[in-house]
Image (tube, rainbow, N blue to C red; front, side, top):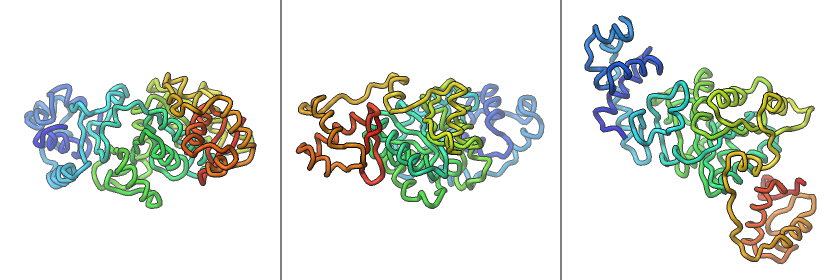
Length: 358
């Protein structure tokens, strides 16, 4: 990460009202690092950015905000990553409007891991929540990092599913990284900070105003290899994320639903527009060329899997019951269930239950 003095210059430029991403990149292209921008004379700044912005750069008093951000970055697990840092995610450099800096809390190395975004409705159905959790868990077990926006509904389910697997999760916020929103996700916010990564481009203390969320959506798609939409109405913000993903050259995936469900219409519209229809986690893993985990239990044969499916039947069932019915150990049953889930033959449900899907 940047040294304190240079980081202070980055912070000052980003905190001056009216500079904006485009203006900042223009200044950096002209003068170099932020410290060189700040050292440039008024006339040079005016020629590059205009008289008004040059005056604002010279007169803006953001020292207190810069000092607060530098103090925040000194806390364990906190960091501020700038465009000049090697930790800055390379995939964000590919998008039209990369943020000048990112406030991060947690495992910063996740920014360079192969990741998939999962988004969807805040008012998700129970089946949508189950799908998001199950798919995220399967992708996490396959080594993907799951990216979402920490909203209620599908986002929260995706983060929770990812934390249940071997991989992890990144939450991109539409507010300051020190602001917990929504409050109902306070425990999840804390869990992601401890075991995954929180990310925000907004200054500390920024409230969750409506205009922030479409802007943060470009980062959800930008940092990921692709975007999976689980449930979305036609006016859903998730469709904004999907559109941004397509514009950024990312893969777009969608799970179909009932023709009678308003929350399926957004996914169906995406599929009509060329999004890849998804029925199982394996559909996405194959498209992204991600190899699913190999079988780790030597005694779990194909015949045993067929037998396990027979014991599972077509009603929801938990691991303990399957162990009683099959005579297999919990570790063996869990490993077989994971593989069957990755193959799209079963789905995990809330409460640790599983159900055959085809």
